[in-house]
Image 1: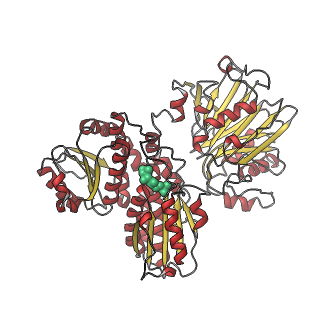
Image 2: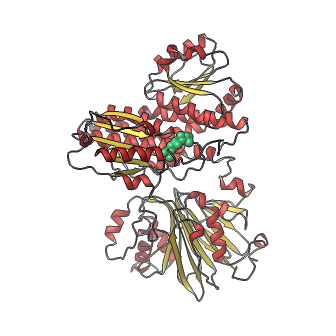
Image 3: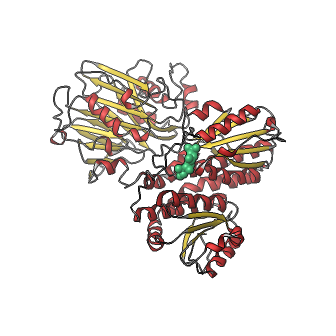
Length: 621
Ligand code: M6R
């Protein structure tokens, strides 16, 4: 997830920003407008920043560097009338100066900023072998493809036509802005990644979200997938399948602060709702469903996986629960012993064989001190180490032998939500890869798991569509004395995660248990004032779990269940339908628990994005 911004208009340095009445308070040059837009988009990533500015006599000027937007010195281009900018959240290639956007063609005449992933970039790059590439990014193929299209014999040397042609070549998701020396337009294309146009009086804007230009105009047009647009100071032309189309102009009524969160009151709720797109990004280009295989772009020494004795997952908090889910998948799909350890408790231990052990750190931030400590102990013992993380260039990636990125996009809320789903999805793909390599998983069984994974984003969306039902339940039970979460098998980590989410943001007492354990002690706590929330899905031994729920109900506890669609437990007080997605169904159920925690906390007016006493990244042991 990156942020892009573009501006074209009549504002010049020293004009005082009089592009339109709406822009009357907006001081400065094109460079300043683009820079301010980037600042507003920094929540989308801050690995690097860059701009391309152009004016009638000054040509195209590009400046970019690694680091946050404030580290970028925007060049002074006095006659600039257009500019594009980018703030990066790295997916392909580490956060270096060279990998920062904009990327240019060989001559430096075309500059492109991009948000998304070009899945077929390796094939395209091979095709463009006579072009000079200067970065490791997937994006860089785009300006070179535009260069080819502009020079093609059957082309017409026009930027808009060239972008139309290039669009057909790109697989994956993208929102791009392209500019060309001597061309007074910004050309925009969209497929799968967000982009919005802003319509000023003598100026046009484009950005990943409206916050970037809300101070200039509230009149916006959302592009549809496949749209290409040409922006000039006079307005916007939009094309679909090469034909001009009209798209509605809407007026934004949010204040800037809310818009930054996409209209959501809290980042946490925004991130809960981002899960379908985050999961799509996690899975993009990695599933070969027909072939029953995955391509995670990771490799192990020959024979290592075949001889593997044990996978040991080390992690903290939510990442630890993702590990608990994954350990069951490794045992079932890869036929290898898998254990999960709280990172701060981990020691390599006697009696284990380092050269036949894979230690996997699961960490959203890649900076958690306890997890880094565990990895250092594993390295010291001589084990092979691996990381599953959201953060390119993070410390953990430099200390392990291999890494798989979960590609969930920046998570701002302290409570981990979308990264949990993306972690488990990534670990599930790793389990399939290891299982296939070891010959423990047939192609047919792999296909079935991959189909479940493929269905997960849609299933999560169906759960999100039921948010009102969860809100009502949260209102009804918010004042309870305590909350117990139960499940079995894959339902256990989800129950534990559900309880963590609730306690973390609502400050209510909540505990998760393996359902069978209730009767061994915790049942003494159960009263009519302690609702039990149960995971009653496939993969979670629903009928047996329901028996334990009934034991709690007999002691007066209200019961809420996340139930596989088509199944029914009549005695539940509240039943949430979970779409059928097989082995990842408990993950879809987890979204109900996230929403429940969110709405209980929201009813109580808690500081949801920054709960008391906590930090997003815990860098102390
Ligand atoms: O960045 P990490 O995944 O290593 O962080 C681990 C935990 O600190 C984290 O998951 C924490 O438990 C979350 N705030 C829970 O929502």
